[in-house]
Image: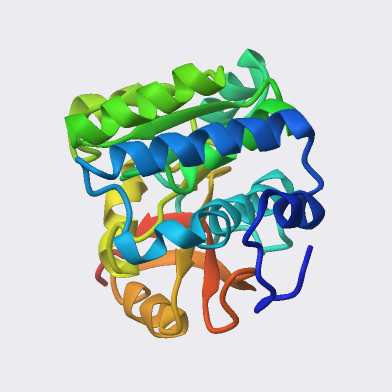
Length: 247
C-alpha cells in the first residue's frame, strides 16, 4: 500500500495501492457513476468530495479490508466476563463458512459496500450486512449491489432496534464510519459484539482522545492503525468490548 498522504484519485492508482482485479475496478467504476447520479437528489456524501471519490471514499474504505482479514492481534485474554453472546456465536459463524461483516450507518456505502465489493474477490465466502435507517439511502445501496452483482444483505432499520440486534449477532468484523463519536459508537455496536469480534472505526486527529473518553464507559482492548488516506487520521481497532461496571 502507499504511505499516508499519497493520493489515490484514479482507478489505476487504486489498483496499484490495493492489488485488485479489473472486475473489482469495473464494479467500483459502476458504483462511482451511480453515486454521482443519485447524489443529485439524495445527499449521500459531502458535495465537496464528489471529485475525490476514489481517495476520500473508496480508498478510505478499502484500507479496512486488510485489518479485517488479518489474524487477531496479541491482546491479552480479557480478565473480565466476556460480552453477552459467548463463544458459541462465533462457532456458529464458522460453521456457516466465512466471516460475517457488519457495517452500521452505511449511508452511501462507506465503508461497508466498498468492502463487500472487495470481499467478492478476496474472500468470496464472507458475508456483508449493511444497516442503514434512511430508506432512500438503503435503496441506493440496493441499486449499487444489483448493478455490480455483489451479494449483500441490506436492512433499512435502526441499529438500536432490538429485533435488528437479535438478527445480527454473529459477527466477525464490525465497521462504522462517521456515525458517532467513539463513546457513543461503542454503545451502538456493543449488542453486536461477541468475544471474537473486531471493530474497525476510522477516526480523525482526535482518535486518542475519543479512546480515552470511551474507556470511562467501556472496557475494551484497542490499537490505533495509521490511515492510508489521511496522515492525521487513525483507525481504531477494538476487541473484547464490554460495558464498564461500577464497583
